[in-house]
Amino acid sequence: QVQLQESGPGLVKPSETLSLTCTVSGGSISSYYWSWIRQPAGKGLEWIGRIYTSGSTNYNPSLKSRVTMSVDTSKNQFSLKLSSVTAADTAVYYCAREGGWNEGYFDYWGQGTLVTVSS
Amino acid sequence: QSALTQPASVSGSPGQSITISCTGTSSDVGGYNYVSWYQQHPGKAPKLMIYEVSNRPSGVPDRFSGSKSGNTASLTISGLQAEDEADYYCSSYTSSSTYVVFGGGTKLTVL
Image 1 (cartoon, rainbow over the protein chains, first blue to last red):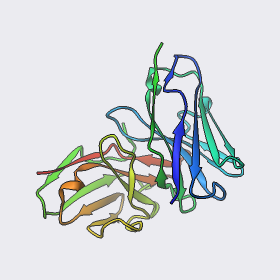
Image 2 (cartoon, rainbow over the protein chains, first blue to last red; image 1 turned 120 degrees about the vertical axis):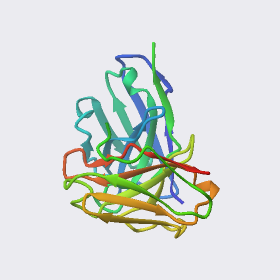
Image 3 (cartoon, rainbow over the protein chains, first blue to last red; image 1 turned 180 degrees about the vertical axis):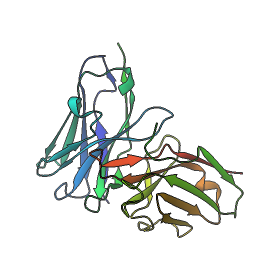
Image 4 (cartoon, chains in turn green, red; image 1 turned 45 degrees about the vertical axis):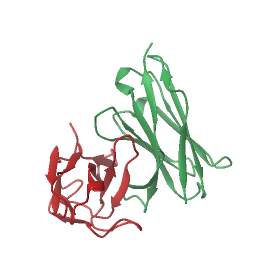
């Protein structure tokens, strides 16, 4: 059974960079797209972007200028960096595996990690 | 404002059936058979319930079904049970550079 686990600081200061890592266990990270999705408290889901195991990326245009994703296949991990954060970036951040091929659905999710942007 | 439009809330009694709608455009819901539905209980991660409009992942009860007509997709839950009370989100592949869009979510209350 594939499992995903997010890790990283729960508190980030405004204007700094949010950094999260997702560790995949129970299966290989290879040959899949891996996404980051966030959810502000009481609100809906927002797709941030995705990375393939080759390192190819696609980002949500609304966040593209601030997002960088990377993958480390040797550690079965992928990561998210979001720069110049503001309070609007406060949310639960999920990592997820994409099912199918370019179909936009997510079959495995991490439990989520709350990141608060505050000084 | 979410790209896909869902009702904010629906309700039903145990044993009844409910349907949640999800309206998009020809660039997403109407243009591709790549609509998916997620169930989210409070404090938990979303769980995939339907993909490719009407396919159920292994382990999802057949009480859950999906369909699509034009630019509107629907999730139907029959034989409502107390544990079905949750938030439900639709999503769709989109031909725009956004790649995938979500609905704003629907809160299902089992009376």
